[in-house]
Amino acid sequence: QVQLVESGGGLVQAGGSLRLSCAASRGTFSLGNMAWFRQAPGKEREFVARVPWSGYSPVYADSVQGRFTISRDNAKRTVYLQMNSLKPDDTAVYYCNEYPPSPTKWGQGTQVTVSS
Image 1 (cartoon, rainbow, N blue to C red):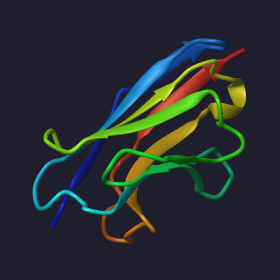
Image 2 (image 1 turned 180 degrees about the vertical axis):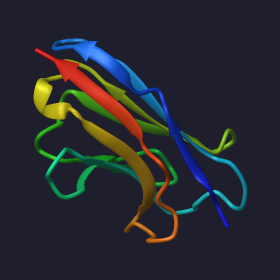
Image 3 (image 1 turned 60 degrees about the vertical axis):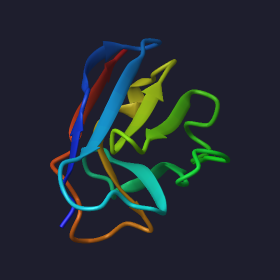
């Protein structure tokens, strides 16, 4: 069973940047799409971005298009999310998972807080 561990969150001012990492601790790293999701306080979890095994043609939510970049290093079994020009609306707990998400592979997430 693959365990996904997110890291890299923190507190940043609006306009700043953060880089999130998601490492697969054991099991077989997904050969399909990997994705980032986020859940803000009082809101449902939402899709942020996904990337196929090849790393080419990633897909982004409209709200992050042009500001976030998803990538993966299959040799390191890690998926990344580079977040630039952060806004207070980006404040959320960020999770990685397969895409479509597997209900058994949600991790603890990593908190991102953007101050205005």
